[in-house]
Length: 534
Image (cartoon, rainbow, N blue to C red; front, top):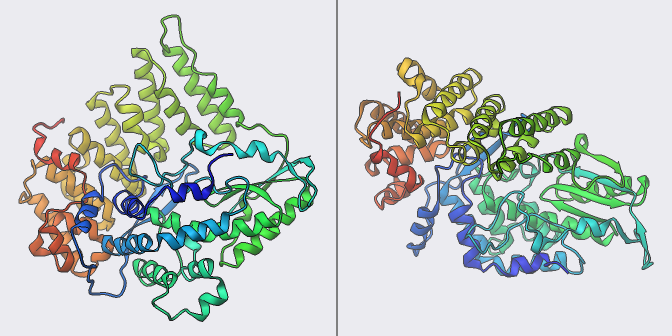
């Protein structure tokens, strides 16, 4: 038998949970690889007292990322002090939470939830989106194809004829924080003790809402603590559905249920909707499908791509084979409307040994696709620029094109990545060279925290770390104005740009300790850059 859900939970100590959530779970994976909360975590460890904040709750930074279906998703970065309070509360309550997970998953002969917090033996991270390890996770989907008769005590087996695919509508944004106590204690008990501040589940509820401007609707998308909180609720739903006889797997908020008839499929959807409604959640009916079995385990596009690219007589993948592979991937993406295929293709090709001409072709074609489909931008550095040894002048040309187009569309995510590439590979951004005042005004007027931060980092680097340069001082003034009025929504930019003397309360105290949320590798570029590529 594969590892149980509770096996994974029991492997994580309260200290490991705290470190994983706080040191590695504050910033979403979709951001440019600039930010870190490890120094903040280490700073928190030196403190014996809780942070004392001058407000009952705080707002948070918002930013948009583009999904592979070209639909933006709103994500959040919480006030770090508030997030620390949540992580500390979860750490203190970890024994009760593990007991909750034991209770909800006891008796399940396979692990229904597939993506959750877990201990990783090569990292201190405890959560990764779409993480799978076949050695420990197995493949229960194969066993569910033939299983015990639905809703029966009969031990005989029956082949499943349909799979129901469903997901929760705007899951994290729809979570009612009061429903966390409902899941942990039962709705009636939780409501009776709603004013008791000593109850651990009420404390969790409170720190959640305090982190989100005092609002009780919605978990932030991005911080890893949100994934743990969602599991508290969804494992309760799992238990009810499992006990009713349904056999399915859940990947965060996506369900694949195996049934014997269309009637059973409809009953599953009705029961799932009913259980979700108990927690003020609902199904996304537009994405609900009932598919007749058997169906291919691997999508057709994946099978076609797995046979490619072909290795030439040289032992390398040559230009024609690289071209054929990319053409096939692009054709499949357009035919299916699933442009996540290009993510797969980019990652797969990196593992192949390409000829010099093959590398040039792959780099140019993938860079062109990223210019058209910005959701590919997070892959460029690791999977294209570095492995294919793309010249800095070519990265600059690509980045400038991205910047120009993104400005027209107010695509701040792409602007952040374009600016990051300029920082990472130390070249000038054409937009600032050609129209400094207009481009800087655009950034200021955007009021986008991450774009302001990335632009500030860029100019600090171009001025060799001198924070008294005119342009840097200009951005510092913007930070000063925002600090006075909207610190919560711009804390990352304000904190990094301003000195301790221009910060207040806990921010000033922490700044004097030289704590930064920018990775050391990036900060080192402030002073190590000694040339500019024009």
